[in-house]
View 1 (cartoon, helix red, strand yellow):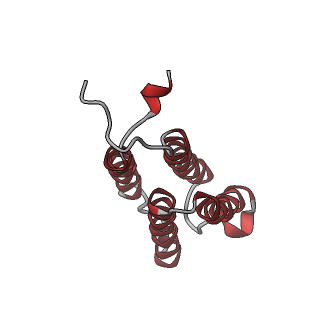
View 2 (spheres, rainbow, N blue to C red; view 1 turned 90 degrees about the horizontal axis):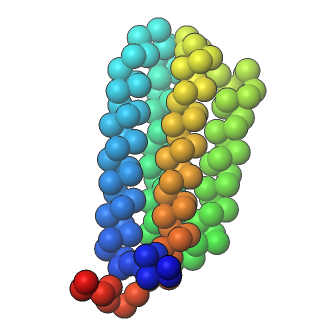
Length: 129
């Protein structure tokens, strides 16, 4: 069973990059429907999304997973505040859309963290067969 989770660093990074591509496209599609969002809120939202990408890349490239997970935990706390504290809700964005966006970001972070933790101990060279 352990052989299923052994992989090379390149394969692990490829899996994370694939998730990033998928969720990036999904978020791009969601951003296209935010016509009622004020410019200031749109800029804040785009900054949040850029922070997501940067935080996930830190986790996938960091040699010290513990520190990267602390950064990601702070980011996750920020997402929870965005979803639950009305003062942090973007002006002009429907609450349902905000919750879908936060759920999408939370799923993205969860998938990347699971890949990183499960496949962290990589083999020097994966088996050819």
